[in-house]
Every structure is written in structure tokens, then in C-alpha cells.
Image 1 (spheres, rainbow, N blue to C red):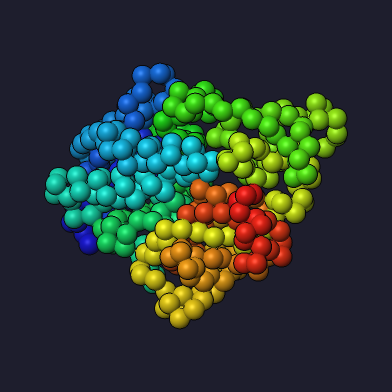
Image 2: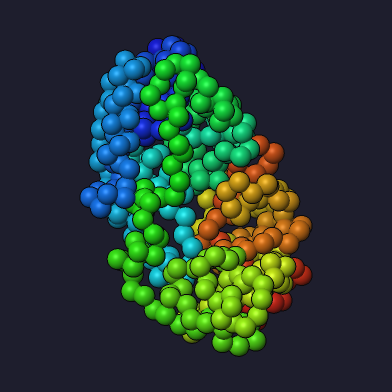
Length: 376
């Protein structure tokens, strides 16, 4: 990192971005902070007001200027609208991926450049460099490349990840030693626009509930669901059918059938409908362009279907629809349409794609696609 480089840090009010700013100052950069608001909410659930106060305190301690910008309108149009559309379609979206691509590494970057920034920095657990410009963080439990895979390489090249080589306890130790007021602040969980409120309460303000049958794969009625949007594949808690179904043992969501508004549930975490080696994905986004091996026919790599999952060996092939077909070496549990499959070669993040459907069964393959479509 060149000394004297003007870097604007996305200061959220949390400990990670605060330490990112601290490390940049120690490296000799000219550091300023930019706090962005992505959601206007007066319900009392969102922590945005406290986060802004914390950001001000951090900047006061570090002696750096703090800028503010409000992207709430763009967030609703470019992130939240798709979030709702995915739920309406019966899928489980991941708005963090869109927020990074559309807001944090697009609008935020543009605004920082208007403020004279040579580069921006964030408190993400990721590292720059490698073949694609995005590498896994040193701390595997905190690695956030899953959420960054759709950010274009040009934007990544203008970003610094100062804490990507640290583990979380080291970050907190640095914050404590420097006297940063957020050194003990707990990590944020979930989505700011939901905050601490019940998820169903929030979603019910935007989408109409559509209760329907909760059935076994054989068609046995075991309960009623509140609306497919409230459930995700693999969910165990909140089904409310344990004793009422007349059978002991945990129940899991195995599939959704939007056409019939039917929620398919099974007992036993090892049920075949919860496991699959195959998935179809759409809208592939490759950070450094489509890998040559894929262009030649198939790509052997590793992939994640959720944050924090250890990377799994797989083979990726282009599909006739312009998407991807992914076959894992080992069956994967609870593949959720609407989430993302993200690909890696070693520590390098190659990119990813949105999961369109998973094909049930450990031995499922293309021949089962038609039969499995209703359950995908």
C-alpha cells in the first residue's frame, strides 16, 4: 500500500471497520471515513442511529474526518426489490451479495472517488491479490468472500481489506490496545432492515401471507404452513408439527411447491430429499472472466453453497440455458434455491452463481431433472 494514498474507509460503527481504519493510518495512508445509510427506519429495531454515533466516536479517537451518505432509495430499488421478488417466487434470497455488488462496491466507490479517494477500504474478512483479485481471509470462520463473489474485478482492484490477514481475536486486541470505543461491541447479525424484530413480522408488512398444506413427500397432511416465504430448505425450528403430527422425531423442510402452495417436510436429517450432489445455477458472475477450463467443457474446483461451509470438491459445466450445472463429489445438505454457489481455486475466489434448483437424491443427475422439477 503506497504511503500517502488517500483511502476512504467504509466505517460502519463496528470494530472491524474501525480497526481497518487504524491499520491504514499506521501504514501511512491519508485516511478518511464514510458512513453510509442504506435503510430509513424509525421502528426502533434497526441499530443505524447507534452505529452512526459509534462511527463518530471512532473518528474522534483516530482524528480522521467522517463523511455521511444516504443510499436508502437506491438500496430499495436495487437490492430490496429483488429480495421481495425472490421470496414471492418461493426462494431464499441473500441480499448481502447484491448489497456488496450494487451499493458498497458501486455507489459507495463512486461517492468516495468524488471525495478524492485513491481507493476505498472495508472491514471485510477477505484478502486482495491472487489470480482474481479476491482471496479467502486468514480466519476461515470469518471469511466473507462468499458475499463478495459478485463484485467486479475493477471494483475489487480499488479496494483494500486491511483485516483480511487477521483473526477476529487479533482484531479485538488491536481495538482494545488502541482505545477504540467499539472494541467490545458485538458483531452485527442478520440484516439491518430487519434488525432484532421477528422475521415473520417484518416480511408480513411487504408480502401477503398465503397459508397452505404441510405434507410429507407421500402426500400425508401433517400440518399447515403460514406461507412458503417464511421457510427455507433444511429448516427445523418453527414448524409447529412435532406432537401434532403424531410421530416423534424432528421434522425438516425438504422442498417447496409454489404451484400448489405446498411445503414438503420430512423426518430425519438424513432423509434423501435433504441431500443432493447436483444443482443448477443461473446468472454466473466470474471475477476474472470465465475460467478457461469451463470454456473447454468442465471446471474442477471447490465450492460453497453457504457462508462458512468448508469448500467442497465439485465439477462445473455450462448448461444449455446459459447457466451452470454443478456436481459435487459428496452429497450436500439442504441446498437452497435463491442462495449462491461460490467457486474457489485454492484461496482464490473465482466467482459464483445463484442456485436455481437442486436435484434431490445423492445419486441424482441430469436424467432426474424433469421428475425433480416440482421439488426444486
